[in-house]
Image 1 (cartoon, helix red, strand yellow):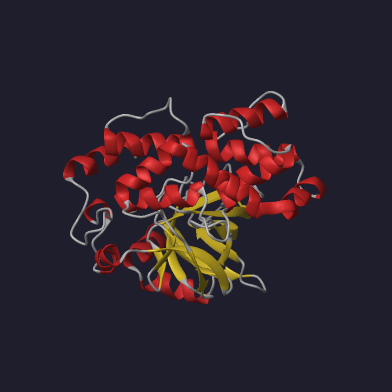
Image 2 (cartoon, helix red, strand yellow; image 1 turned 60 degrees about the vertical axis):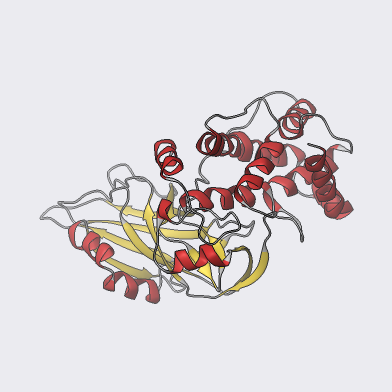
Length: 347
């Protein structure tokens, strides 16, 4: 536990006065507290700010920590969400642990739930009476011979990847401005670095909705695709462009979806940032799981996980899901059938 506290204090030190000043002059402390609580618990807590901050520290480390309100909030935000130059944050490490077992992440769930789920998979029961930071470090020690690291890499523009809709979209009830979530259907790996695992979320909004008309004329929904939420703290802008439309037409699963429930996919708008789906009158919904392709909107630097060579070979060879296994220092090690079964039950 002492190691986790020292790590947090290092985050607070690295954040330094600049981070505290930004807290004072920019983001209100209550907003940072809300962000931390949503990441950890999936919801905002009640009570006064000092009480809520103390509760988070106790849940993470087993005790309250020193420092001013701004220093503690800034340190927690770095420790949980943003990381520092030398240390990835909790959410990054947790995503790598999930991916090492099932080759998928569950970032729509809060950190506390995801840690408990991993404990049940690996050890049969969750140790919910222990501090969260200590529990995650224990999981890392079970899965990896060394600490989890990250590195900066250059993510190219127009990198095409497959996603699918998380929820069914119904033109009859959809409204302009509604948030839409999609998830990665494949791992985004660049030069051996895992940028975003399968299951990572893509966020979009409904730009416009036209209801179906008489004589079978289709309804029309357009989406503004915003960004991909990767392992690291960056947000990666994405769009439906020429490269992703071309890929969609050549992919059997996407072509089949377009052929049965969607009439067309097109890049629209001067910057190509809005994707249009034209739904036939006799197929009024876009079902959950409908696949499409998107692409990165620009070249940018992101922080990613250097995939161990043994695991990378298995991923590149096409071995998928629970068969890939987790890295334990040996290229031959993998997930046992028992662990695989538990993971499937808890997904």
